[in-house]
Amino acid sequence: MTAAAINLYLVGFMGTGKSTVGRQLAKLMDFQFLDSDHEIERVAGKPVSAIFAEQGEPGFRKLEREFVEGGHPEQGCVVACGGGLVVPAGMLELLRSRGIVICLHAPIEAILQRILHTTHRPLMQGDDPSKRLRELYAQREELYRRTGTMILTDNRTLREIAAHALRVYRQEAADFKK
Image (cartoon, rainbow, N blue to C red; front, side, top):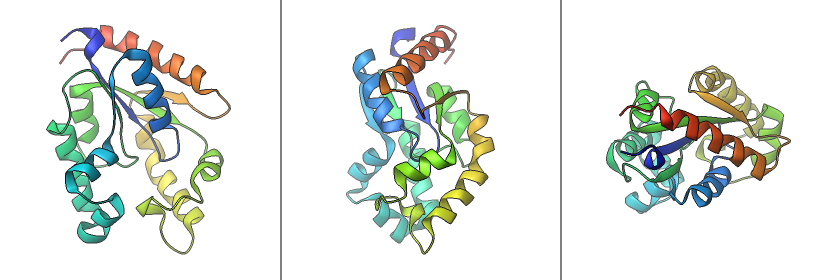
């Protein structure tokens, strides 16, 4: 596999810009863009919220693992991973075995501004979405910090973030061993 074709996986908390940055990177790299949640919805024939309602979070995490293990091309992709994809044991290592992992990060206040009023995030449903978001962020922040190179996405333009991610990708892809 050539360094130029190694998959790039964008991880991080919801609302950090994985899909937006991923689309931009895919254009710059001439790669296919995939959003893991959208791909799971396509294969399952139902929205993530319905999967959560029917199978719970464990059922959805199983579908995420199946997607990473073989539900997408082995090269030439930029993949925006769902916010909780790296939470289950072994998932980060699985991603790292398949490509370069970059974590997008933003402070909790920036994330709150971006997603508090969205309706398509199953883990944000309930009486106090802000409280739930803060709890999830606190639970996951240390894990995200261990995923690999972290790029801040607040107070930066899409162009700046994508350029930074592309530099990191090229450096890490040069040393990638599958």
